[in-house]
Image (cartoon, rainbow over all chains, first blue to last red; front, side, top):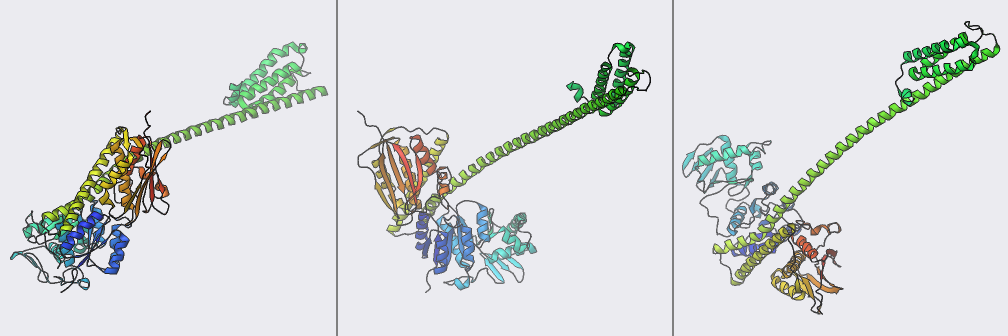
Length: 249
Length: 379
């Protein structure tokens, strides 16, 4: 029997802390809270939570700085809450080490889905419970996300048993996303990885390749595998996986 | 004369005119012989030199002076029509004439030259000054334009700050409401106390939205100049008690200590507007008060006014920020909310002929002070 994952929720609004504490505890998570950035950093250091839900607008420190400082010594997954609707802030937070983000106002199901995804990919050394895939990005030669199967070694891609032919760049793009299933990857991160340094701002490449990939993977526009996060990046999801319900582990 | 002095010099013209005057003098005076004294032609010839000088400058003057001296010797110094000079006295007269003629010519020429240069310098300075004036005017125009652009940018910046602020303030309570409501809708099972607490939280946040909307409406009224208090006798202690009771859930983390004069004095004001002032100041204090601290609301009479002090034990307001906190959309450092509440307080208090300011709470924190006129007792 392993202990339930501990989630540290950081927000300066008491009301949202109450709501998230109740919602997370109802799913079996243990919840700690902090109302400012310094408190959050101290609690991460003292209690080593399994996940941090971090609001970007804090009274003492900028949320992005908190992210950067926490990343100074730990890979604990960080899900960022942002109320300002500015894509730039989310991208900066993701580039500074946040694992995902949720924009306020959000539904509880949305936040819980992000929490589950982030916990799934937490580093092995910090995973309290048996993680489905082990550490960080999935480092296997065969990647599976729902009925999508990517054989990295043989360069084969199958969707529901149907073979799909991809160009080398399309393949590299898909492999990168499939190594981080459910997680948002920023435009800059994808471009740097697939196209190499110096291409970080060429986001129009991504639009073209994403649309080609969707066509080849036969994505249903209402439930796509390849999800666009407008102004931020892309994530690869299993369309059959429901966003609601579910608890830790 | 001045015109001649300042006129441009033409040496050949000066010399010609001088020589002509010399010729005319000889023609006019020589036939008279001994009937005129020798001083008369000398003076007229000096005039010829001066004329040559004025028209032709120094060289023309010297030339004419020499010609005049020779002519004088020929025509007027005996023996006439020879260059011979017999009497020693005549040598002296001739020498003095030449010296005077040349000196006067050179002096006049020098003076004219100086004046001409001074005039030239003055003209140059005038031109320079005009140029500077033009540059200054252009700079002024550019500065004005820059100021106008800055103003427009400021207005633009204020407008986007307003939008950011309003959208942030609306979204914050909405985030809680949506999270809790969606959770309950999805059928998450909570024990009864938690469920009650969550629903109460949703109600609180809905009320907070309502207060925010009320503030935004007041702000637009203030900006339209339509904030007119409907004055009546307001029992201020009742207003405060009622408001503190309504906000009690907001004060779960802090103690509220109200102390108002027991003489049942009435304030002359608009009930709902004054309620908004008290609400905004209490909400502001609750937001900045550390957990477990005390928020105080004290009132006391000061002549014909009621002075009310709302203090918290938070981080206080920096000296430089004390006047700016009452500007719309000016959040305290790191503050996560409103930015309009204090501006509305200031507008309402001022519309009631009162004053509002912020002080340092002794022992730390901010104290907001405002005054309101007391209702005059009838006869």
